[in-house]
Length: 250
Length: 224
Ligand code: HEM
Ligand code: SF4
Ligand code: FES
Image (cartoon, rainbow over the protein chains, first blue to last red):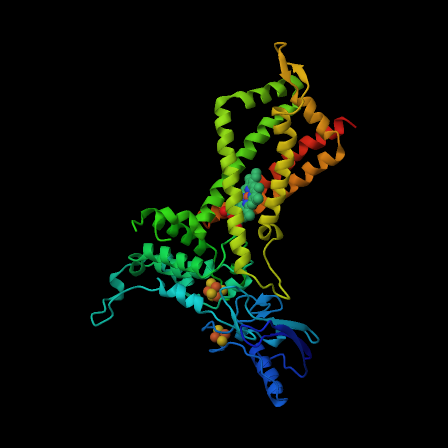
């Protein structure tokens, strides 16, 4: 396949950045998108040019590291996959493909296609966990009954890999889908209920503080999420937060 | 904000407020539409209805609540939209959104509704209260402000009627997204009921648009 790439190049946070065009030939349709990017970088290095910086790690859709806004969509045109799971057969011979970094004030560009997503870690750090003492006496898992429906919903929410596609596609760069997935994942389980109130308050407060936008319920995040995290989680977060705000005595 | 006092300065708190005021404004639309049906009856009845609306103390109180509702909705809209624009400062060179146009342009449709509202209030509310207005007779023969003739005169101008048609279509797009969105903002989402709420939202938007458009069109046509 012959492909024309229009790649965002930016040399550090202070650089203005620009789109640079690259012509690629002899691309196999069986290559993954990242392999195609590897080929591009080999060519650039051979020519003595600076390779395109992009994030990746597991290359099997579980770590959430790979990003990229490919032809106007985070993780490219296919549904329910990450960029590392995208293959060149999803494109046609002769296509022009735009490759841009995830855009959000809270995700500043480090270089080229690499953005800083530590803002997500900061949200997790204020409540995306359960405080349990893990030393020694682990209790039997079955001693805490969880209704099947709740377990299913919590599991669905737990599949969020923190990739940031929801923020990237949102016209408001809102982190609500991510934050809601974490809040409802834990609020639905008995171990997480204990801290549910503080969790909802602290995580939402942190999310606002970091400069993510508000939710306008357009639903773009749900469509683009590689794990199919549902807007139902945002509704659950909205309920949790309202209840917590009214009950909290802090 | 980790306390209840700060609720409405948080992103979610502002959304609750947006949803509550939005639905309150929806209820106002229903009342306003039902009241306007008096325009289709006869001039005397409509003028009496207008007099009742502008003099009844309970309605005066509701008018103040309505103004507060509108102002809250508008100020909250400005705060939210400003924060949203700041959160996404760099646009993509290529962007394919899957959401509806009207869900992404609530600020734009809202602003046009606001412009419409100012024109509407200037013509009818200000005109009725402070403008020069002809007098007619009510059913007992006493003098009454002739609002009916004022409405008739306004809509005999094609461009004035057109402003209403455009304004109401944009109100319809605002509501197509807004009505169901308000339920989601308040956390009211349910696998079984949400599809119904969404259908009711679309029907509501359509009913309001067609309902309100019927007045300018009717009055324009009968005067041709
Ligand atoms: C009769 C008039 C109006 C009605 C019935 C109405 C109704 C609504 C409803 C139901 C919502 C959804 C709330 C939510 O998503 O939770 C909404 C959202 C919104 N309205 Fe209005 N509205 C009206 C006038 C206006 C005006 C005059 C403006 C602006 C100047 C405005 C700006 C907005 C904006 C920006 C949103 C979206 C906020 C967001 O989700 O980020 N609206 N409206
Ligand atoms: S909710 Fe979906 S899109 Fe957002 S971070 Fe989690 S996995 Fe990625
Ligand atoms: S590289 Fe790990 S999800 Fe893509």
